[in-house]
Image (cartoon, rainbow, N blue to C red; front, side, top):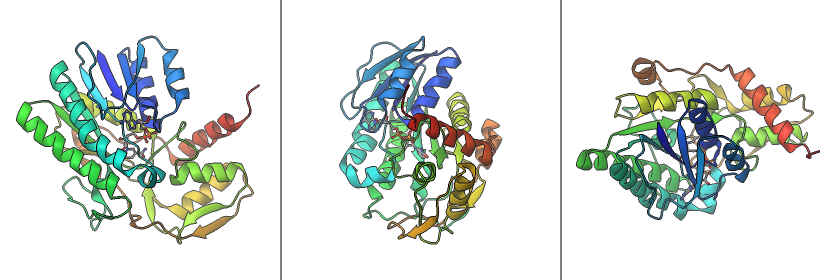
Length: 313
Ligand SMILES: NC(=O)c1ccc[n+]([C@@H]2O[C@H](COP(=O)([O-])OP(=O)(O)OC[C@H]3O[C@@H](n4cnc5c(N)ncnc54)[C@H](O)[C@@H]3O)[C@@H](O)[C@H]2O)c1
């Protein structure tokens, strides 16, 4: 199989490419390295079957030959990026996705697009089913990402209807694991970095707001199953194991063997109160559900951060 992955230098992109290479695919990875890590491309580059193309998908994407599947992951995705590069996010969710769709049409590929639970906004329905249309502030500080991803879903659906390209849409919920960026502003890498350096863990508000965290290799397995399926409607991929953010912070302190205290800082605007996927569709149509226990996943992630922060030599 010949596969193209945009966003290959990112957190999920790295793990997806590694798994595709393990499964014997030929993989062309595309990334502009705006939020991704060079280290991920270098590590993938040591593997047989991997080719890297540095390219911004907001510009037309011309790659020769046919592809069986294109996985579109390219998009700045962390809260710090929402403030730093809102227009880039809107461009990649609109012109970028359009260019990827054009490539799929030309090369006869099926598209798997990575959407997000943020399309549900600060949800008024809990847990979130795919049928829920969401509760999103269109002009808030997160709107570039939330509305960008909603526009991308509308674009993909319309393009598929008009041009007959086969599309799959994964609505990914919070995912974690090795190779997250320490400074990307997401809760888990922030807590782990703070715990490993014995700094206070900065919990937003009371910490009673909930999240559901899925270990990255489980998520990648769901992406592969969805790409192989005939499900053209969006599918939630995430872990229904819902936990208050304060509890996650306490678990990380314990697992890291840290002396850190927990401090409370103001909540960001439009921060969702509750997050839990309803994964009935994924269970039914893909036979998928997460397998990695949270303690085990957190321990592996903490270990990776510990090793990667050690000076070389
Ligand atoms: N990590 C999560 O918890 C999560 C949750 C929901 C959805 N997602 C989605 O999954 C995808 C991957 O997320 P991630 O966590 O790996 O993020 P990431 O920031 O680690 O990876 C995104 C990658 O896309 C690249 N990129 C950004 N703009 C680009 C452009 N214009 N052209 C080419 N490459 C570009 C970046 O350099 C980076 O390598 C994103 O689309 C994100 O919205 C992630």
